[in-house]
Amino acid sequence: VWVPVTKLGRLVKEGKITSIEEIFLFSLPVKEAEIIDFFLKDKLHDEVMKIMPVQKQSSAGQRTRFKAFVAIGDSQGHIGLGVKCSSEVATAIRGAITIAKLNVVPVRRGYWGRKGGLPHTVPSKVTGKCGSVRVRLIPAPRGTGLVSSPVGKKLLHMAGVDDVYVSSTGHTRTMGNYIKAMFYALGNTYSYLSPELWKDIPLAANPYQEHTDFLSKKQM
Image (cartoon, rainbow, N blue to C red; front, top):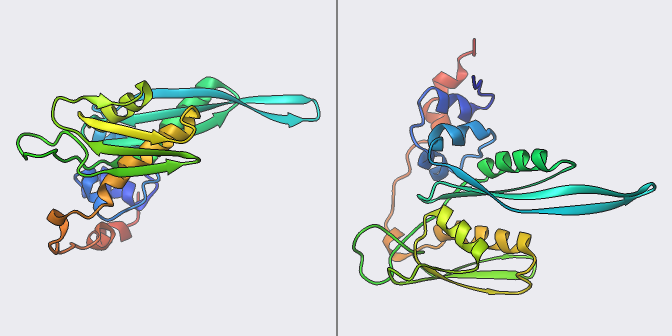
């Protein structure tokens, strides 16, 4: 049984916050992986993107640990990426899944040309960068599919994007940086202000403010 330890966790468990979008709207930091499970439980699927050994020189020789990159998504506009290093592969993967849940971000999707049916591609050209790797996502017409490397396809499919052109530069063989760059590019889809978002949207009270009486009650 999940016993929440943060204010956000308590609000979620009591049903005061009804969707994950409310958390994103107020940019509330998620510190408990169970919050993401609560909202996206059945839809989430995770994929181990890469496991690489990393070594540290010690007096007795090398000490090898394993670094796991895990992506998590619901194919409906939510994606997370977790990186964890541990002495055992299984522990690294478990830790990376938890970190990926805490890093879940919304992905904005849009249209190429005519606005009919469900959004299928990215709303505009977006870039992400990590190390020397730069990844650029370019909107594509319906039916194009994911024009990307096999790893990129996995990530984009998890994010719920159906058609997109991917252009990348830099040392894309460094898969860790390539995955991160694509994750940052997908996260940037909501930071781009397009004309349909220009109108003023009155912001409601912060959930912590709204439910302050409930939060001030002692937990039994």
